[in-house]
Every structure is written in C-alpha cells, then in structure tokens.
Length: 227
Image (cartoon, rainbow, N blue to C red; front, top):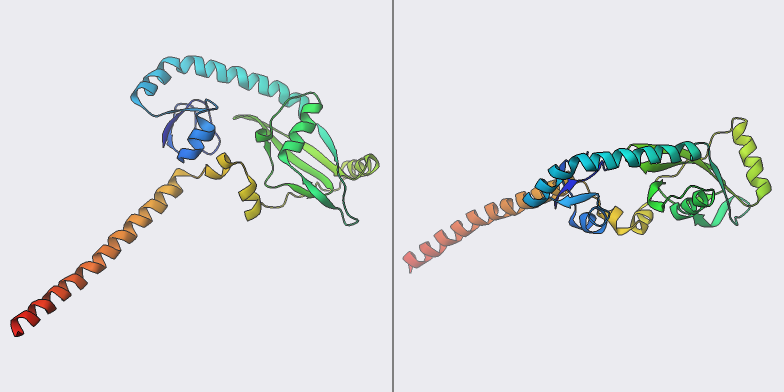
C-alpha cells in the first residue's frame, strides 16, 4: 500500500515522502496513529495545504520529547523478579514492564517507545533505548534483580566499571510474540523482491511448458499421418 508520511518514521522515511508498506502495517499502525495517509490525489493536496502546520506540530512535539529526554537521560529503573541461583528469571521483563517503571518514575511513556530485541530473562543491569520522538531518543538502564540489596550491589558494580548486560538477539519465538503491526512492518523492497521472484518463476514454468506442448502436438500430427 502506498502512503504519505505525516512525520518521520524510522526505517521508512521523512515527512512528506510516499512509501510502500505492508497493508496490515498501514491499517493497524500508521493510519490509526495518524502517522500517514493513503497516497491519493485528495490526500496529496491535503498534505501540501497542511504541511506548514504539520511541521510546526512536529517541532513542538520534538521540543517536548527533548524536555522529557533530559529528565530520564540518567534514569535507572529497578525491576524486582524471582530468579534461580544462576540468575535465570522465573518469567521475564518486557518492554511493557519497563514502560510502567519509567512512567511510575514521573515521565509517561508507552511500551512502543521501549526498544529491546527480546524480553530480559537474566538478572543484571541493561541499557535500554527509549524513542521519545522520531528524532529524539535516550538510553536509560534497567536494573533487574531479586531484591533491593542485590539491585544496589549491581548498581555499585556498574558504577565501578563492570560492563552493562548485553541484550541477547531476538529469536523466532520473540518475533511471533511481537505485536502484529511490528511483524507486518516488512520493507517494501523485500515484498517487491518476493513478488518479482514469483512472477519470474511463473514465467519460467510457462516457458518450459510451451516446448513440451509443441513436441506433443508434432507427435500427435505424425501419428495421424501414419494412420
């Protein structure tokens, strides 16, 4: 589906650009959140008339995001969880959990603004990127521990130079658990490539069938003449 971006969208483009996205991504995320419009002539005219206002609104939101960013730039949220002796959590810490912890600290954010490749499943102190605006992001820390005492010990160790925990890469299971809008956000180029390969394969198959049909027709004709 072709859409006109009403603001900068990471991995898609800048305000005013027309891009091709998966229909589900447009219907479930971009359109209802007013981040884009369907690319029609009427909407193109509408965008041009509203562009100055949209840019002013975006600039205002950016300023508000920068203000929030300054407040949480050095924030460390503590999330207490039960875990085994080796530190493996009985459960996990998700983007939603981190968003709730940050909101409780006084700055409201949503889970969509929390960027983690997959849920945290081991105690430790982790760097977490928070996207407050398409052009504003900050990094906070999530201190996952079994008790307040352990959280303090981990924080002290990090302050003394211990590296932060490394976020493990996303797995196939984590991809399936992502919101549908995230799974549907496939690059248009990838979809176009797949469609192109399918068309090419069909054309190749048709090309192979034609010589066989021609040979069969000749054989039938020869049999008829012999008869």
